[in-house]
Length: 325
Image (tube, rainbow, N blue to C red; front, side, top):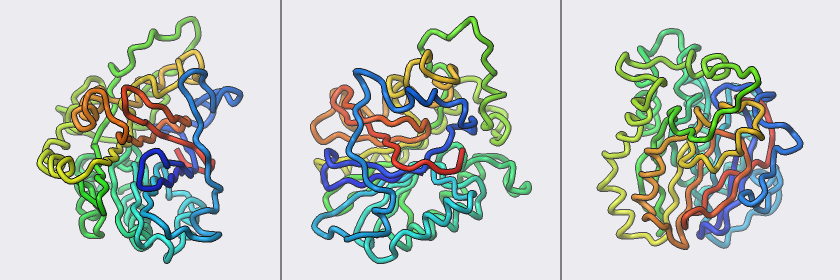
């Protein structure tokens, strides 16, 4: 699980998280422990918050705060208990960004989002890959797109935002995305036996798609990116009324937000983590070279990251490790 807290400006961002494996890859296939939280020249760790800061201690009421959380995986009872321990009083005027992978089942998704909406003034959400798994839904959905529509519908019923919005002078823009294999441009590791994506990644079995959409090409990534088109007018309105804008997605916009393959326990991980469409979408919002207030938050890979690349601050910081993935 990840949670982040930031002040009104993106430069004040920090995180709190229980981590889990991306796309259902087991914990042993993420990164060798001794280099898990380090990559020289790119990685810069932000000051972290204690795990209990969200439900113990003294609440700072001096300014608007934005919390970011992802990869909750509340199908695990201890993760759901963590959510329920959050204060029902302290965060009524604050913003919560939920960057995907809330729960595998629709039932747990609804319970989790209801609990979060009860605690925070404004809640924003984009889907992660685990949210769209259908294997435990008892045939209630024809495919993962139908389940996605159900998740977005219940968000609307709960008052959870899935579209861009201005909140007290701060622009929040959710970005829908999915990964594609061609996102990976680094030379493949050879000379060792590496499990196939289909063996390592549960998405290939737990998600179901219409015949015209597939993980084998860019069709899925393009489909999810086009879901953002309907929000163009809302994005323009956010630009008109806000200097500070936070965008967020579940997947990665750039491959250099992941360690090199030689550092990964599963070297093919970059093929299932990001989207070139997302990077283009991000630049269209924050401009090609970004600006001093540009900030994008992502999830999915569970590697700590805090870097400014081409004028945009990109963040993903691990603070707490728990079950999930």
